[in-house]
Length: 253
Image 1 (cartoon, rainbow, N blue to C red):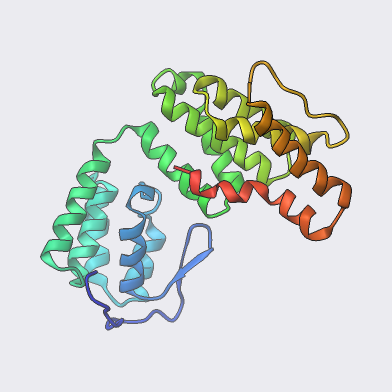
Image 2: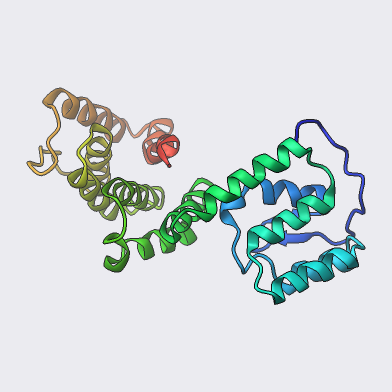
């Protein structure tokens, strides 16, 4: 929306709870904001009888609810349902509506695997680790990896490592960072691998792995940082060490 718009429609007495009760919406504007921001997240499950009932009873929009139900019965897509809501709301300019249509056209041309990865990336970025991990592991099934680029597969492996690291499962994290590195070598994946290895076994010396080579000076730097934190046992340093993987959120595609 190009301008700030006050919520001018009906405000629901009871919110509609999106994403397993974690995101309450009270107005048409709030619903539109979610749909607009997370178009890639929409699927048939989102547009359900519960949503239609909420629109009918809480927003007092029986006509829109009936139109959405009819669209669903005709086999309409989630994107068509979203566009119907956007159009009905009247809060978007013609230029904005055209931009939304362009985004939807791009999404419709994406593969099912790409759409699934978008959802997994979103779940990871919002700290919904269990759900994100489920989707990443599903994407990494052999029937799926044979249909994706190496770049996409590497991103999935790396992000899976991030999830395990954020959950303090450092051995598993190291394995996925190693696999990501072997698929397409880079210093970031290598550094993540060695840090995860250290956190998995802090009492052991961190030695060079010939399968994941790293410049000696880089490995020494990593060893020094981690060893200092482990030896000093300073609460702030340990907290920083344990949350190290969080600094890589910006790498999530």
